[in-house]
Length: 329
Length: 308
Image 1 (tube, rainbow over the protein chains, first blue to last red):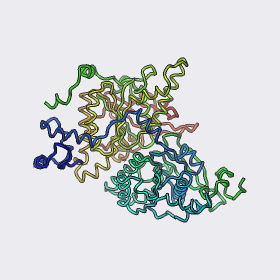
Image 2: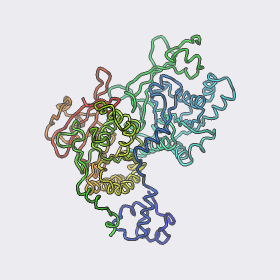
Image 3: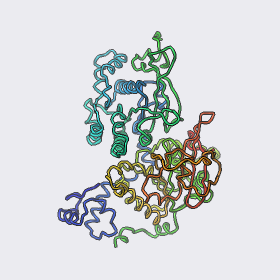
Image 4: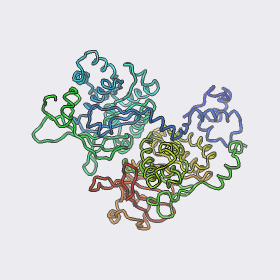
């Protein structure tokens, strides 16, 4: 709501604001909507300024396309199988969702993506941790596999900025802070931020959903709106994690209900592989559940340990389904 | 006085306004019943759950509008209002390039215009606006009135999606239903005026997010398979038919002012996966001017929607 205040625009003096308030007009919407009865030129000027400040302006499709071509970047996740599912990586300006049950590897994938972006691509990452599952020693372990140089490891770790949040209000506050202040100021590590990872968004939202209360749904949609605005305005890739439930036919689907299901652009379902004989396997299957670029239901298998291995081991093994250590080729 | 001061238009614009904008009656004969396609002043609502093909169909229709006439398009301008950052320009350009490419194959290879220039010319007929709240949507529609007035070839307004602010508005309105629906009601009234004054067509998508617990599934309708123009029993309303045919998420939850505006309603649902792993979607269209439902099925390929 646009509240009328003195000094907002050239015609809006203190006396006019008081006079309008006496007539019970406090917001700009009234001024804009009742334009047919407005003969006062001052009010028409107010209307012009309010429209200029608060409406959204149309952009020609050709300009938008040029803009997108020059500004969209594709960030590799570090795992070739995941990259194949995502059509070569995470696209900036989009919201990607990873859904999976407990122990399906969502946090490990988030770590792997953060490490890849900060070490390989040398860009900053903002990691919003809502489960307490972030382990700096695991990040260091992944980095140690990629490089032996302590300085490089420390530099890469510095580019990952962590924000712990444990309830919906601190998450909303954090996202508002990013939006108002800009991601560069929010991230102390320097360099340009290219990805925002929220692990997990269902941990703070699921407790407030349910029952007849509307506030939970409204806050969920506010989080969704903020994440998408941050992705588009700052040109970053946003990765969120979510839980899974089963629908009426027993199929796995992402949690948080029908309303959230419209929010992400790309959705990947992670599952453990049930293989007889291997109890502690690190192999997972990823299924593409929603995508605007590829046909759905594509499946890939990958090993969670691939981020913890060095380059020679990774490319010598083709990155898939190798549990035992092989000789680097 | 204010009306004349606001609506100055020159003679050409007045003539264009009186002559009328291009009709979209034949925009897609697969989806709309014969002879009942959307004409000036109609509002089409695309309703469906996530991943049921609404946005792909929207890209298909928008591409058909902005393509030049020598490529089989309508060559009209489209205003696309995007409320939840859903619009994927790269996907639209892929669909556009495929349509331009396959039409060019039938022509001589000595085309004077570059394919990129062609794409850019088509995209010049598309305008995109992002809105982030229902108040901003309302203000933007006010602002767009001038655009409609000054561009007589702008005949389609797409709002994707109009239900995006439902929960935020509902919580912001407190206990009073009238306050909760106030913004959407004002948007609907404004759209009504724009439709009457400027004779445009509006396409809007709504997300299916509410289950309809009040209707029991009708067993005889549940066994229906999609076919061309099969009339249902004459007493079925949209909701009864849809709750048995599609999933249960078809409750109409937006305000009555919006529901009164809608003249065509297309319900999307996911079908089964065919043998060659293609997902089939189905669209069922009901209109206020015809009886019965027009059903159609389609797949989504690389080049957009392909009807079966």
